[in-house]
Image (cartoon, rainbow, N blue to C red; front, side, top):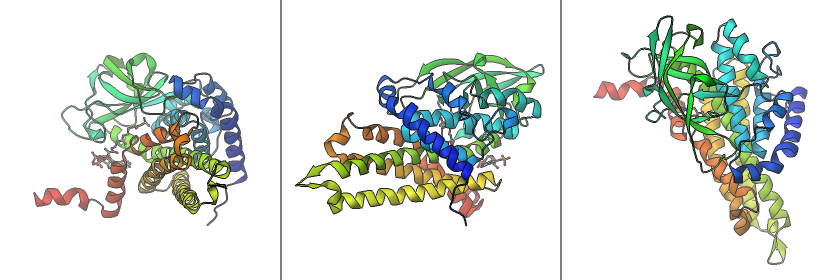
Length: 389
Ligand code: CAA
C-alpha cells in the first residue's frame, strides 16, 4: 500500500490550493451574500486546465488522473463549495460520461469545448416528480424522422443557466415504465429554456435552474450510447460523480476545521486560550479524525475508479461518510467559535449551510445506504419482498 501522492498529484494539488487561496477565498463571502455566479472565474480555471483536469490531452484536457481531479475539487471547495459543485457537475457529470459513452465523433465534437472550459456542462436527470426514484422520469423523446422531439421539464439543474452542453435523460420508450426505456442525449443551450432560478440555503455562488423542453427536435447524432440504455449511463455517471461530491464535502469540512483550529488558538476565555480546554481539544480531535477517514475513503474510491475497477459502493461510502462528516463538523466549528460562529463575520456559518446539500444531491444519504446495502446483499434485497407478497 502506498499512501503518498505522486509528484504530479502534489503539484496539481499545490496549484489548486494557491488558486483557491488567491482567486476564490477572498471573494467567496461576497459571492455568497450577493448570490452571484462568478462568471469571470471559470476562464481563469480553464487556463490552468481545471475545467478538464482528468480529460486526455487529445480531447483538450490536462491529461491528469482522476485522483488529481478529486484533489482539485477538494481545494476549490475548501475556498468556495459553489465553485466546487460547478466544476464537479461540469466534469464528472457531463464531460466524463460523453468521453466514456460517446462515439469517436461525439467525443471529438463535444468534449474539447468542455475540457477547455469554453463551455460549461450540466446534467439533467431530476424532474419535479422524480428525484431519488430517478427511473420514474417523465420527459419524453418521441421518434420524429431520423431523430426525436423531446418534451418535458427538469428541476434543480446545477449550471442550468450557464451551461452550453447538457447531458439530458428522456424516455424513448413510453410503453416501458421505470429505468428501462430511458435514453441519454447530448443537448445544447439552444435546446432548453431556463424557466426559474432556485433560491437555496447555501451554495449561493452556483446556479440551480428549472428547465423546460417543448417538442425540441434533436438529430440521431445527439443520442449518447444505445437507445433505451440511458439509465445505465446515468447510474455509471453518478458512480463517479459521487466521488466528486465526497471531495467537495471534504473540502468544506477541512475549511471548517481550519477555521475552528485557528480561532481556538487565538481566543482567550477564563484567562487562557480556549485550545487549552479539553472540551475544545476533543472537538478538534474528532474533527481531524473524521476528516482523515473521509479523505481515505474518497481517495480510495478515486483510485479504484482510475484503475478501471468497480467503485459503485466505494463511491457511495465515500460520499455518505464525507457528507455526514461535513454536516457534523461544520456545526462543531460553529460551536467552537460560539457567538462569532453564528455571525457572518466568520465563514463557518457559510460552510454549515453549504455542507447540508452534500447529503442530498447526487443521491441522498438514504440512497447511498441503499446502494451500499445492495452491494452487500445483492439482488436478494430487491427480490425477497416481491417473493413474499
Ligand atoms: N452502473 C451501471 N448500471 C447500473 C448501475 C450502476 N452503478 N446501477 C444500476 N444500473 C442499471 C441496472 O443494472 C439496471 O439495468 P437493466 O435494466 O439493464 O438491468 C438499471 O440500471 C436499473 O437499475 P435498478 O433496478 O437498480 O434501478 P432503481 O430504479 O432501483 O434505482 C437507484 C436505483 C440507486 C435508487 C437510482 O434511482 C438512484 O441512484 N437514485 C438517486 C438519483 C440521484 O442520485 N440523483 C442525483 C441527481 S444529479 C445531481 O444531483 C447533480 C447535481 O446537481 C449535483
